[in-house]
Length: 88
Image (cartoon, rainbow, N blue to C red; front, side, top):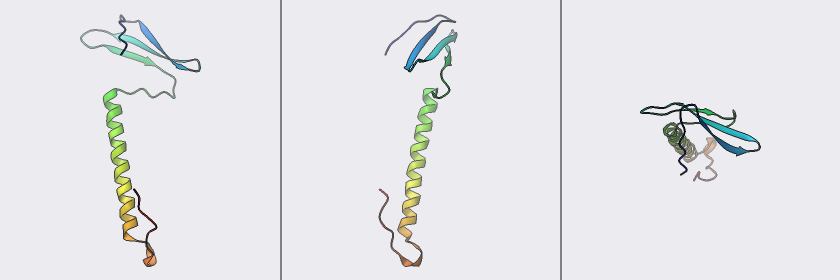
């Protein structure tokens, strides 16, 4: 981990290639630090705890969707036809 000390109003630049940069500015310093992030529109900027919650919710949704499809396959097709496999 790289630790960089900055004062209020100072910034760091993160080069993400192809001439694009993300600029992180210390907007306010005190008992907590407020950071300003300037990034290209296509770069997602998330608070870490929110990104983790979204990833967990996506995994849950994926698992639930897989289980729902498997239940449909297990029931069989109309006309008594057997399903053509399992969703694993």
